[in-house]
Image (cartoon, rainbow, N blue to C red; front, side, top):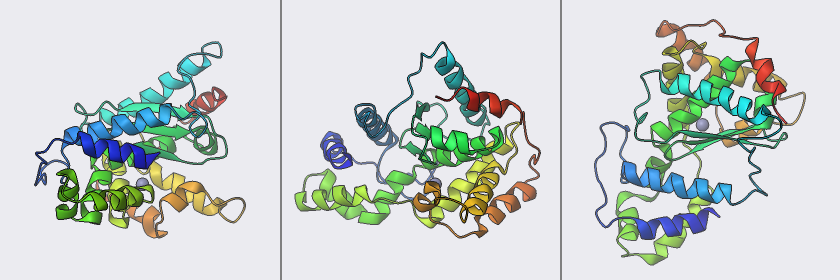
Length: 270
Ligand SMILES: [Zn+2]
């Protein structure tokens, strides 16, 4: 699926690739903001067209329960987006969808701000603050443009540019195949954790919400199946400590926000 998307995408790239976007996104990225948007749009379209792998919860239905669930989830996302800390708040569409799959404890965000949360994760968490922490982390991956930055470093600017300009078609296959196994680097994971705190610090949420989530996962590891989020986000255990340290150093809120409300959200899940 991803291969098709990426091949298509490369053909649609304009011939004038943008260089040196160190300013807002942070880190070198050969891709333009518009290309992040285009890539995200295509990947999200592929997801919508693949209900077998991604059974999306409809935005309406079940006597209004779906509407209420989405209203609640958008409320959480909007509080983060309105923290004043999200760089591409206006440029990216920031859509959020629920994937109806109770066995997957995960969430992800594709370039351009298309966020996906599994019902498995929603049901697993205990508080809205933990959910906000995870969403902040995922929003940071898109806002800091980690996917396209990763592609730029992984393959090198020259190779990517050669492919973009059609000078090296063999490399196209190489990159497309590599994209299937694309993982964020440890530094990108740490950056997403740090920005999760930074974003939440500008909201009513407990700023170390993401740490609460990781703590729960680490303590449950022995008891049941290994949480999927940890396998897609390989990291040392000091991650929790780093999140808490930043929250304390920045003097951010460390109290739960509207804790009781989260049960209501869970009750809306199919
Ligand atoms: Zn991550």
